[in-house]
Image (cartoon, rainbow, N blue to C red):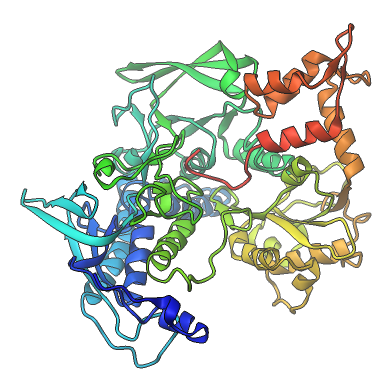
Amino acid sequence: FFFVMLHRVPNAFVKHTQVVLRTYSTRPYDLCVIGGGAAGFAGAVRGWDLGKKVMLIEKKPNFGGASLETAASKTMWQLARRSKNIKEFLKPRGMSYAEKYDEIINCANDAAAAKSLLMEHQLTKLSESITFKRDESTRAKQSGTIDLKFGPAKFINPHTVEVVAEDGSVSHVEADHFLIATGSTPRLHPEFPVDGNRIITSDHVMTMGDWPKSLLILGAGVLGCEFATIFQNFGQTQVHLVNHKKRLFDGMEDEDMTKFITSKFHIGGTRVHNDTELMKVVVREKGVLCTLGKRVSGSGATATYQPDFAIQVDKVMLAIGRTPNLQGLNLEAAGVLVDSRDGIRTDSTGVRSVSAPHVYGAGDSTVDVSLVNVADMEGRKAVETMFTPEAVLPHPGYSTDIASILFLTPEVACVGKNETECQRLGIPYVAATVGLDLSTRAMINFQRNPSRLGPEKPLDGRVGYVKLIVSHDEEKTLLGMRCAGREVSAIIDAGGMVIRKGSSVRELLANLTPHPAITEAVQECARLIMGFSVHKPHVFPNSCSVSTYSPEDAKQHLLNQIDADGDGTVTKDELTTFLADKGATPQEVEEFMATCEIGADGTCSVNHSALSDFVKMCGPGVVPNYID
């Protein structure tokens, strides 16, 4: 091999030449990408930018990954929202309409095919190298090339993969570097085998044949709630959503958000079963008999359930997460290790294999934040880390500054920390909420908007809201933003950019927003924090609110949570239950209890600092994730 010694190049010239100079090897390809979804596509194109010879291997002759092929939840959600709007328009006029299942599936497949063809068209065109007319430090002067192969791939040695084509022919691809972007598949349940008919996963939604009259969804995370919303909005299925936690997104989102989401499910007819577990299923000729149990003690992995009632449904959908799709790759031949969650074990870059530095992972194969936009970013980051380690372009970190959308009714958008996370970390903050019932644009979107002037109207009845969370100091640094309502996904990045810069909420007031627009509610919320909102909290007490949280509040908040009977003392049993509810394992609870002084009467002397640190360690993350 011939290696370019970059450390001998003058420092002022390094960043530019890093992406122009090329390392040569005897292998036919600089990069082999396995998987043609979001991460693989982005990685292959970035390799082309950097002048590399790229081979992209996709198992099937289409591109886009599971999000287009089998689990087109976002397309289905969009179609379901349209269906709901049509029905709401027709109902007051004495008319009704019910879409045929085949029509909806054909429409979703057409949309997926259009996106897949677009991707294929670009990759085909990038099979030829071109010379760029304009120099940029972010790419080579001469582009690379992308070749395509279709069929399952597996490693036969660290630098070679074997590909079996549809006709059975076998070929081999040698490359210096590999990017594994094979996505994920639905996680299966050990006690409820999937048959694709009565017991299904998201992979079977596009091939059911007809709408089920009733559907039980096991798992109330992001995936479960989104599919519950889809079937609810099409209006032809009675949905049962089984959630083993006390409330939806418990520990992930604030109580006001979870109440809002739950209320919308109730209004739409979905039955949410909280603190419930599916204990037994019996597949019958005409449906599935499901025995549901209520939690009687413990939480999480230590929870115990007692059979409570049974229902029969047409189908049961497992929505208990997704698992990396690494089976069949023969990673051992490449020296690639996997972690405890069956994803590629990576180093500090988050994309490079810790055991095989020439192999990288992106998207669901690395099991971090399972979002399409993150997969796209990781694909580009992986290729830049391979070939231009000194000039990797800025990418968002794997923290709460990643914006995410929950496709519910209405949609929910999140970025940064929420109140739950701030309290868990002991961060003082000010939180302000403005209801979208005060937004002109929201009033236009929601014709049936009732009056919000009376104090008896609850938050759950709102058309949506914007909440900003800022530091409890003069700077008022924006820490987080939560939105719920129609089209709020279009405004979440306004808060995200301010959060990533570490700037004050005052930044949101720097622009004059158009009218009417949902962004006006964001600015009104910022003005509310600053003390000069147009709408006054005492006039609209259910649409405008400001609250604060200080370290002193944190101490009392923890003690109040532990002191279940409210007698002002903390007992051993109360503390044990509290720690278990926070997600601590029995061993962790036992170890912490050993640090406490326990009196003869069973009362505990709790060290607040030690307790706060312990809760931070065992608390959950707040970025919605399809993996869990």
